[in-house]
Amino acid sequence: MRRLQTGPSDADWLAAAAALAARGRPLSRPNPAVGCLIVANGKVVARGWTQPTGRPHAEAMALAAAGDAARGATAYVTLEPCAHQSERGPACAELLVQAGLAEVVIGVGDPDPRTAGAGIARLRAAGIAVRMLDSAACETSLAGYLVQRRQGRPHVTLKLAMSLDGQIALANGESKWITGEAARAHVHARRAQSDAILVGGGTWRKDRPRLDVRLPGLEGRSPRRLVLTRGVAPSGVKVINDPQQIARLDDVQYLYVEGGAQAASAFLAADLVDRLEIYRAPILIGAGRSAVADLGLAELASAHQRWHLAERRQLGSDCYEAYERTR
Image (cartoon, rainbow, N blue to C red; front, side, top):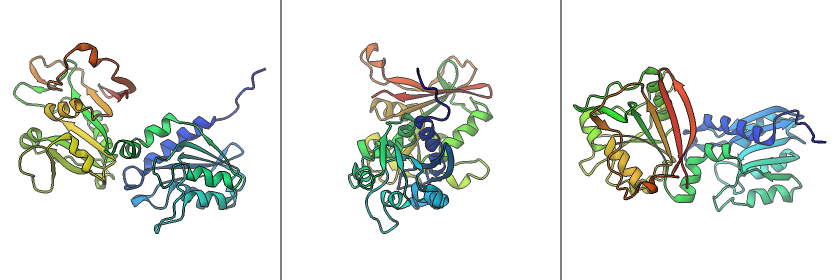
């Protein structure tokens, strides 16, 4: 007879820890934004997430909040606990051992060679049960850190606001506003989760966009500004000449590309876009300016099997869709 589940599963707890980790992004840089839950008898007794500038770590925050309640409990942590000592704080694997936990459930192994596997080994050597779950929610929450470690570049999100027929502006260039207030507020929230924001040189010269965050209480989260151009660097803005140069942005985990069409096409053609976010307004423009320029496709077959839908929601009268690159 199958046993009925009466409470949240391990995957549920890790998904909750991943959602908690979002509070640390992007202020945790240069460290990843990690989430940790301490659970005893099916109830959360403490929670923590990576603090600004990367310390204290999520586990340290959660254990400090739990106190003696951590003894014999289970820790759910989105990333393998660090195993290396640092001048900025102790190794989290050692903190978990000292706290007397019974079990640690981990969503993603750490690709950092200083920790990879060593955090798990330290916990098991102390008699703590350790389980790796390969959590999709944790992978998504750590996307910037994982892409940076595995591919040597930031995680790239390309944002496009367009009409139903795929236009981002009228033929004369007018584009304010295609989408409504709810969609624009959502864009500002996405900016606040990014380390840097990029537009093409044409967009910069024509619109001089502020590229900041204009949501009450989040103004201080405005990302670093970048322009893709071969021209002279504008004051206070960093210039890159080619999309491949994002690999030199060592302090950037999450890059948000807002266009226009030439910049969008350059990143797509270079296969550097990991997430595509489309805001589609219920309007028709007809002969206007297309959201994406030529991508150099030689055959239609090569356009298929590259993107899968990750999220869809309604934002006022506009539809928001997010697609993840299938790699």
